[in-house]
Image 1 (cartoon, rainbow, N blue to C red):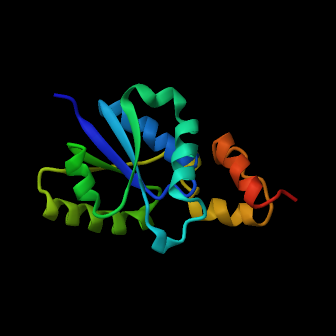
Image 2 (tube, helix red, strand yellow):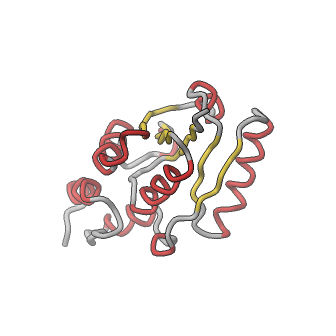
Image 3 (cartoon, helix red, strand yellow):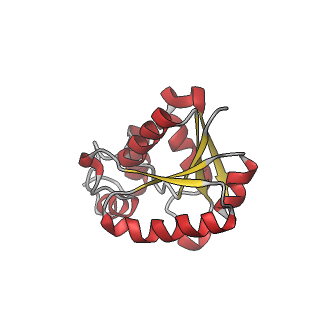
Length: 162
């Protein structure tokens, strides 16, 4: 039986750490579903449609056992709809763990058959976050090498380089 996992997140914007976790997830699971949360209360820089497009372009080589979806509501409901076995979460540092641990336990309470797997990105990506990427880009500074080229281009459109 194929193992299917959901990797949820805002991905606002997707960066190389996210891509690394996606690739690692595909080494473990038969199918990986990247789930872009449409949470307008967090005031994302990019609308869901653009985030989906950027992920799609950045992951063209992964598409044989890889899908990208948008969702709102409870993650565990999406996991059930997609008939997934597992939730994948990226952990960069100990500071990520406490929140992710609480979420994993809540998801287990809501649906005991779904496991959460924590994956660490390559150490060269452990300091990267979407928040920091947006902050650096907002000052007109290049984020080349930290994000896929499509994201670099879209950020430069919003925040022209100095």
